[in-house]
Amino acid sequence: MKVRAVLAILVGCLAHLAPAQFVWPKAEYHDAEPGLYVEDPFIVKYRQRFFAVFRGDFATFDAAFKEIEGLVKKDPKDARAMVWLGNGQTVKAGLMIGKGETKEVRDLLSSSRKNLDRAVALSPNDPNIYMMRAATLYIQGQYWPKGPRVVWERLRDDCEKFIRFVGPDRMPKASIHLRGEAYGELGIAYLRLGDKTKAKKAFQKVVELCPGTTYETRAKKELNALGL
Image (cartoon, rainbow, N blue to C red; front, side, top):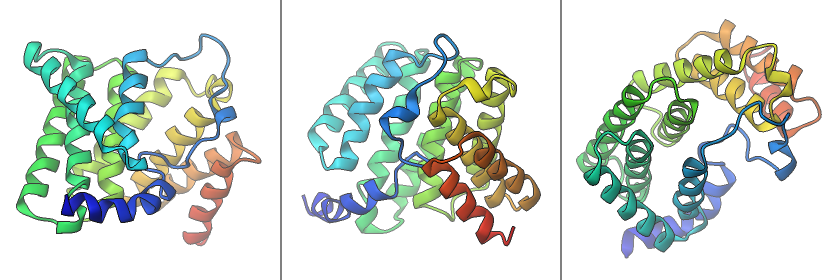
């Protein structure tokens, strides 16, 4: 209860920081050309239930995580359940944020990354899976910036793979959310990896594809920080 009390104080801050998002999306940012890209309903369902924790709804998260643990135990080759197991372990590490970076937290984050990689290995060409890995690693990178370099390498690779999957020519027809997240998180990954040139190109792509949105605002902020 003590740990959760600490996190409850931070809930407002965590929500403001938009966990797993380059920008917290508005409803209209999800509009896209029909049939271009459809998220797996399973992924959407558990995103809603898991990320309820960032609103302080621990019960919904706990129940959903137990379901996922049961699904993985029943079928260790279920990539969709496995990716959420990895995500849930990262969220659980976040629930211990008041304790600092203890061995328990480090072990949870390490196990999370292994399970995320297992999920992608089980279904390497499913964008629902590798982009959920990317979203989870983005959380890790935001809250544990001193984590291993592989966090940013995987995030970079997953975002680039998704852009290739949709196709650069078709990205303008995707939702603002997908455009902004794919290129925005890609820019952050490159920035953390020390490649400012590629980070600049990614942020400029956000500005180009998401004019008049909060994605453009965030990207320009990153470009200004780079002195560009």
